[in-house]
Image (tube, rainbow, N blue to C red; front, side, top):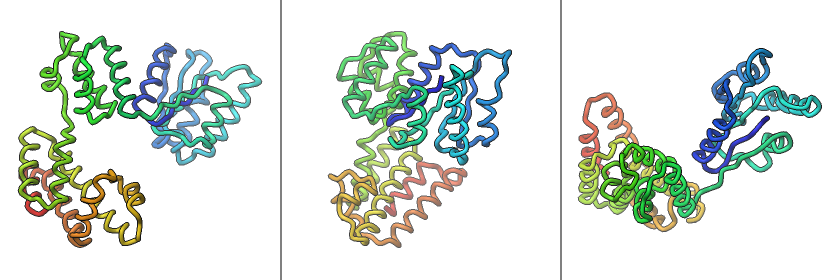
Length: 311
């Protein structure tokens, strides 16, 4: 048997693979990370078979990203073509890709001819809610719809984060959870506060920036997460300035810089009101602060407070 798992949602891809693997009841499972392992190690994983060992399963992770993909692909293709006349593969091979393969991928075409393919779908907000309900049903946890939406919002509609939070809920004695319990147990990504922070930075509202930073730190939000969001905002401002200089239009800039179209006006205004030199200075300042925070020279809280004075 050979099966390929890929798709647009890595959480669903991995979940399906694990479920199928458990149902196979395989005694020997060999996992190979094709991005890291040598070509020889990859070959050995599915070629060296011991007649006296139970049937084994080999999981080839990110085979398409192997440096020697072409040679490994040719070898697999030959083995699969030979197995047609021999009756069956003497081994079970699972190819797990943590991203979606292109429709014209040689690997996709090969497996479609000789095995099975699972492709995880792209999730929108409603399909994420449906998936959350399935995860809750699996754990026999009862949540009202309003609390399900609150859980999704606190996890920023990231299904993998939601699954992590649900695993916390399974530790409760009660299988019925109210809003107060959810708030105490689960982690809030503080998406709205982070959005307000970047919004105040873009509007040059230093007083509001300091207040929001203080609020986030009081709520014990990871300072490095806050720093990463500030860096992301600076990157968008920098890209906007550079792309405008190349006469790119709004749609092109939003796509390249990953800016929500409804916030483009504020980001553009900020980029128009600053210089490349100022942005480079801020990048250097943030990198230096992050380094000093990591080596313990200054506390993360003090580092962010100092940063708020120059944003």
